[in-house]
Image 1 (cartoon, helix red, strand yellow):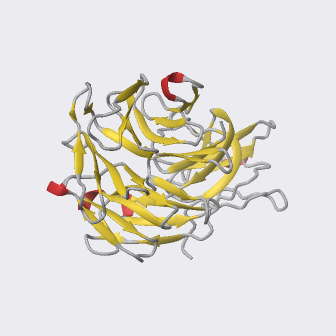
Image 2 (cartoon, one colour):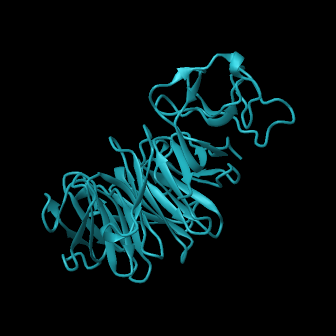
Length: 352
């Protein structure tokens, strides 16, 4: 087993990326749920409910997020930067779990095996892990052959086949494989088009993807490379997209996060324009998921930093502000009613 990729901590603090201040070592008094691997201070024996080790995630994210109590009794959240300094993160939110990821990417979840699968684009591989870091494995390396990836952008778990569909963006293809490489197959996209978001229809066996670079369109293809359909062009009108991101298929309808147009788009899964509709958000949607009750879970990145839960046309609308956190992909886990989101190299689970 390699170094754990995810460390989960229950806490009520919220990460902010600005306004941080260094915490001197004498503030390390009655700290809980924390151990520093750089010699600052450690949890006192008998006071730790968890025993996570801070992991480095580079300059865009913390080494780890931990709850602690100051000398005055106030609870706060602490982070370690990659230069070994400790920082205080003062903003707050309710009902949250956190797990920190080293150079992560967009992700999916297998509810049967209770595993997260992450398109680890920085290292051109797929990561499999539980939220507490157990069962950590990686698969893949850089390249264009079997078992190789080039900046995989998105990933989808299919329960029926117990396999993964991966938008292997740099290789201009869709990969379908079980974790570890069994049943490997690829569908090369025509014209070297670069897939970004990914969705799947297990009945008709179509893979859906967004093509935000140059094309500003959506498309579908089967894994034998038949049935290619591309729909849309650049713009803000009917049948047009501007940098589309996430895409989901559900009961004959395709939903698209039309990012730069600040809206969701729905259309029939024939991708011929039938059933076209839009839901204006006034924000740029990044990630998109939906549940069996018809609620959408939408992440809004810079400059608004939001997680939105809503039905179509604002029914049941609610949002949570995530100050200075840049949320991207999202997954709703029905068994625990937690919504998991990614922002940079940090993953959060929020119970709305």
